[in-house]
Image 1 (spheres, rainbow, N blue to C red):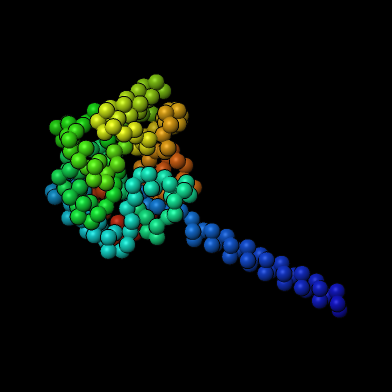
Image 2: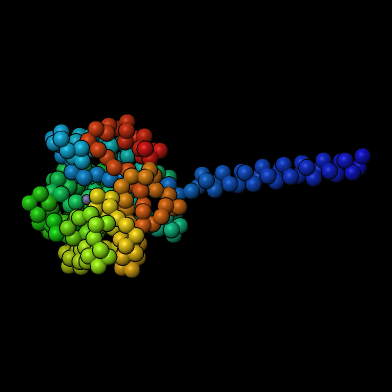
Length: 253
Ligand SMILES: [Zn+2]
């Protein structure tokens, strides 16, 4: 009888310990780092209906107002990587806003809204497009940089990198670093793949040049488990509504 009792006790202890193990595991999951990274291109009052990458300004402002009203914290790129690397605590509702291609609508329309709501953002900049006919001027780039917008690297000419040899890829990335350093006085250390296009050479060049990470297109919400050189971004397209935005910010799709 005594033996049966002690066997029962051992069995009970096993259940308790396995349960506490489960509780511990789910606590780890609930504190895991999850940060939606949003990707916009052109945002303007009257987007071209034939260009899905152009986003309506009115919708964009509704989304920024939603983030503000619901306690989201927009991150700088440095804060983003510090949180991923567990060097900084994660705020309750973090989000990273990224904009690609340094187009002139950013200065005209997006920047004033970011200022209005006190938001940080990152502009992935194509170095050859600075001062281009549909792009921000060098002076506009400096103004946004001095007011909470990180300038990061989006290559020299915005080409399909996977079509290039390693040396040409190296030039596309490193010459943009040099040009952007001349422009801003700062060294870019984060990359966004033009067209979301890259291969193993691209990643090896970025590592060689000391980049902390690189963003792709699609793939849901980024986490501390995301490959630093294939970090997912959630792309906003013209037909997305505020409801889509809220869903994508929450579940990544
Ligand atoms: Zn681009």
